[in-house]
Length: 437
Ligand code: SF4
View (cartoon, helix red, strand yellow):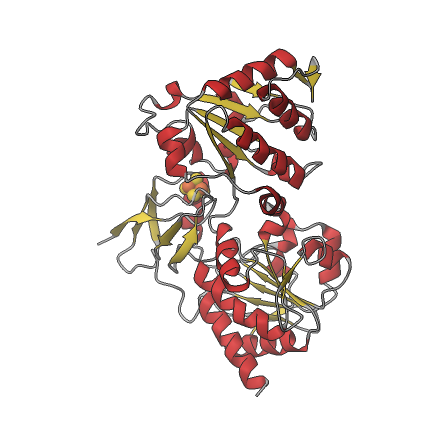
């Protein structure tokens, strides 16, 4: 009899939906149906059925081809390569569980590595702003139950976090928001007319890269001062209208994304967004949240802050203490300066998502990919080690975009002999200990 598993977590985006239902075959090896997930989540679970998923590590041969090897050989190669490297970089961790993120800590310490995660190329600027200016945030439950004015600044959840608007931010009827969307004012700030902007009551189609000026204009108005007739391509009367809508609301929620962190100003766009949130709190209640990308990209920030005191860009090469200085110890900067002599890609795809020059630099040295599937990073690697898929055939703890921890379930039996990230890092650590005895 097929079995329906309920309250399953979706291991894709930062919404980390935990109301998914998955119908699995009676032998627990195949996903038959997926309920409640968006199309991305749905595909992710069905993709786990792929019969071509790798079950053994593959090592590049002198002629350039890849040849299957045993897990013991792969662990031995990884341990030796990390120990031989002067400054290895272990990067990724957007898509694995906290158990894997914790286990890699010992490996990184023992090899004197730089430990970094995808925040480095995503919401890293938000961390810098938070260090400077604090983080007046809340949970997504508070948004659902209280927010009657929701601002999407430089983010497009209809495409990037597809169920965000129906679970938390626009449509749900909460405790104090019983009329759902009808009772919320939605503001979109985006140079494009996105599908999120189409849902908005007010859309500011600002000039790209001028977010700081527009934030500044809102702050100026909220503090009772005058602004020019046009700011960042937006009319003064529209800015006054938006500021008034925010002031009148009972609870303003600002969500921000890559439109702020990847454009001119970067962390300063977030600095001023946080300052705007503070200003709004003199008129009403307001809160702000980063639209974290992967389902557990908040995880390394939590786990490594607890282990090392820093959320990302952690330099353990000194041996005695951890050091963090994005710009100096961030993955792309290290790669571009050619300071890295071994690269380990875990639960991400640097091959696809890094600038090509940075990939070329790290490709000069041993390149190891730890990933359940074939991807760009696995195809250019010297060694590809498959692991179980967190949230599909491996359970574990994940942190949602609002830093709420959620226990994810395994819905399928794992591929025989394929370890989890945690098991793999424990094996690598043990091998390193044997080699250095
Ligand atoms: S919104 Fe995100 S977490 Fe939810 S089902 Fe879709 S991809 Fe998965």
